[in-house]
Image 1 (spheres, rainbow, N blue to C red):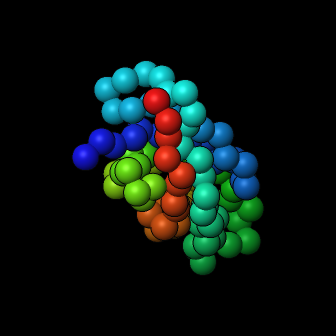
Image 2 (cartoon, one colour; image 1 turned 90 degrees about the vertical axis):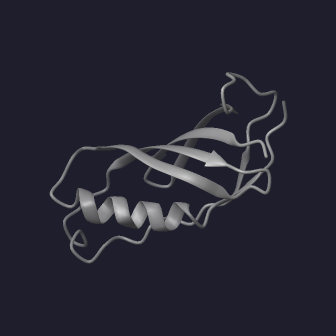
Length: 102
C-alpha cells in the first residue's frame, strides 16, 4: 500500500495544501480535496471568537481516506486548544481526497 503525505493549512474555510508521496518530495498533481467538512466549534470555545489557523500533516491512502493525522500547530494559541484539536481531528478523519498523480 502506498500512502500519500499531505500538509494542510486550514484558515477559516480556506484550505492550502502541499503534498508528496511518503519519502518523496514531488507529485505531478496533488491529492484533490473532495469532501472536507469544517470542524464543529466546541461548546467551550463558542462565543469566544476563537478561530485559529491549524497546520496539519495527513497521510492519505490510495482510497483517499485519512490514515494518519497530526495537528502540528494552532495559531494563535488559546485556552481552548485541546477542545479545538479534538474537533479538528474528528472532522479531518471524515475528509476524502481524490488520488495524487506522480
